[in-house]
Structures are given as structure tokens and as C-alpha cells.
Amino acid sequence: MQPLRKLARVYGEGGLRGIARAVKGKRTTPSPVAPLPRVANDSFFDWLGYANAGMLAPGNIDAFDFAMARLPTPDPMIEIGSFCGLSTNVLTYLKQKHRAPNKLISCDRWIFESDDGPMLGKSEISHADYREFVRDTFIRNVRMFSRADLPYTVELFSDEFFAAWETNKLAADVHGRTIQLGGPISLCFIDGNHTYDFARRDFLNTDRWLVRGGFVIFDDSSEGSIGEARRVAHEAINTSRYRVVAETPNYFLEKL
Image (cartoon, rainbow, N blue to C red; front, side, top):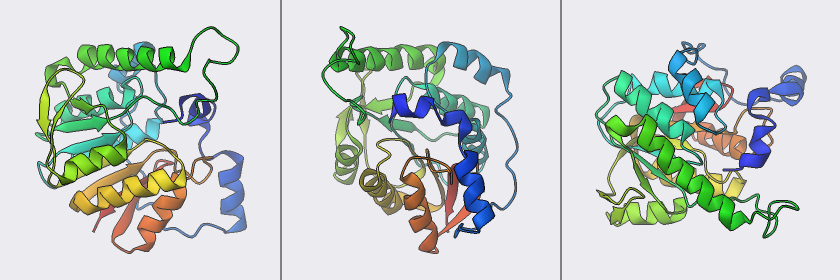
């Protein structure tokens, strides 16, 4: 998660860089099959956004909704990166809307790769204080907006999370509960560290457990994005084991 950098670009994804790529014919990936139905105008998302800080492209909501209605199995859904809980609460809301029985499990350590020193700029607020504030805000937000179906959130980096997943570890979550990790998954929202090496590992770990017909959504992966998840999405497509469901403008893929 890169909260400070993403604020400036989340509603401008695509932008001039994306237009330039399209005009110059440099796109090497398939076009979306069809525009997704729009659900982001649901008034719930307005009210949620007023109170719940976060960076979530409206197109991601459409992708979540489309996937939630078509989950191939009741296996868990994974969210990598949680920040203040905005996407977590959206996923829970859509899960209830579609009566999906799948557990939602997220992971985050709330340590941000954009940390540039011990303090926030020239303030007297430390990154450690900021981290605790965001973590506490996440817990408060999901206990409010997802209280009818509280998701499991494990305080681990994604590499640690998937290592625990592989060993079927019984893990504690931030709400004081335990959750048995491991087994197939039906959907993954990759929204952790957006640098290439991390995003690639997140995808490879996801791919290992994702069932056929399962979905993966790469945040910060649009053709105009400054993030490097786009490169990972291209590599996934080039394996011929994934199809592009849509570009929202982020890449939304289905495993074949």
C-alpha cells in the first residue's frame, strides 16, 4: 500500500500516459471483453467513503461486484493490503449482497514502503504513531461497517501470510479470534506493496492457490499507473492461463 502516492492519482488512472500508449499502439495485452456493470453509484459507497479513509478506484468496486456474483467455489477470498479498511468494507458489503458464503481474509502489517524517515515531514508525528493510528482506524472501521460479517485480518506481510497459508497455520487476527489458514482460494485483491518484486510474489503465491475460474484484481495496474503491478498483470496474461475480464482501468483477470 502506498497511501501518500496513491492519493494523487487514484481518480486519474489512465490519464495522459495511458492515452499516449493507446495512440502509439504500444499496448500488448487483450482488450476487455465488455464494460462491467456499474455498481459504484450505490449510496452505501457514498456514505462509506465519507467516513472511511482510503484509496479505491470506483472501477475496482465494479470488478469486486462482478466477481462476487460469479465465484466458482465457496473457498476464501484474500485481500493483500488493508490500510483503513475501505476495500475490506466494500468487499464485505458485496459479499452480503450476493450471499456469498466465502470467508474474507485480509493481511497487512501497516508498514508502508513510502516511509521516508522517522517523522511525517517536519511534524512531531512519527511513522510509528501513524502506523498505529491507521491500524486502529482499520479495526474501528470494519467493526462498524462489517460488523454483521466481520472479516478475518491477520497482521502479517504478504510473504509471511502465504508462508503461513502453505503450512495451514492457525493464526490470530486483529480482533482476537483465530482462523485456520490454507487451501484453495476463489479471489484475491492484490493491493499490498506495488513494487514489481513484491507484486510478482503476491501474484505467484495467489496463482498457486487460486482455483480455476477464480479471480485476481491488481490494484494500481492501469496502463497509466505509476505502479509496477501492471507489469505483473501483463506477465500473468502472457502465461495464457488467465483471461482479461476487464480493465477498470486496473487489470481484472480470471484463471482459465
